Length: 379
Ligand SMILES: Cc1ncc(COP(=O)(O)O)c(C=O)c1O
Image (tube, rainbow, N blue to C red; front, side, top):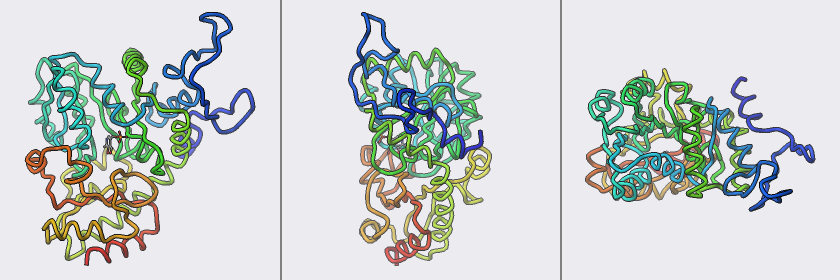
């Protein structure tokens, strides 16, 4: 199927009892059994729910995978992946990534004896050098949040296979419309479905997609044992969001390109982080593994004082100052004090995440209005 057909029809079959074209919201906690153990495949809603099942099928289809699993949040999906590991196992993770992932790794899992080795994964050699006999998982984000760094998924998958480790890619920033990590050799794709999959800033949810049936069984066991499942209403919202993913991502990418170029030509703006620039260090790889460059952009002002950074952050009208990303409306965010505040400042600075960095989630409004809003705030 071509993308538009795939996104619209993924996981959607008319409801067998009524013919309803939209998947019903099965708002139930349990299912009546005819006799003990004699049921229709649904026993208890932490383990199975028909709305969630339709979404999980859709997730698999849109990521070119065999199995999908939906979680109550993106971090709950990440949590399930790390629970595949044992004390003493090592994880190689990107040094630039979402602050909440870093917090989960360092503050929750380190004390259970799992070791995290952070490195700039854009340099494939760094990953190869970090591999030991204990490496069980390689965790990538590409593009990274918030510095828009690009990692070669295919090259890293060669390393992970040789090491006998799983490769999991957080594909939140790209979305399945722009990038499909399983096609490039990843074992697991993770999403914060809160973002582009939902697309309307009205749901918190996470997803994992994989091809290997035994890996799916392990992750399903963790999902039902630990219980971080999404409710049926939220599954319905993400299913509905997926139907327009292709249209939204095209517009996010088109607007992203206009804003990135406008920022670069603005005399008040210093560095602009966007993988669509031909001189971005990851441009060639982004072009190879992504279909377009998306709507996420970060930048720093020439006057990089905290006062000026804060003034700009508080001066936009259309770009709302808020955490999160990937909704139809544009957002502006200050990673150092918001999404990445959980990373100690010296760690952040070491990885190039300065206090002056501003992150934009470019929405799908008219680009002219977005440019005018930024122009008004930056001058
Ligand atoms: C790249 C990335 N991964 C994971 C997450 C966590 O997802 P959630 O907020 O749905 O738990 C986020 C949230 O901002 C994110 O930006």
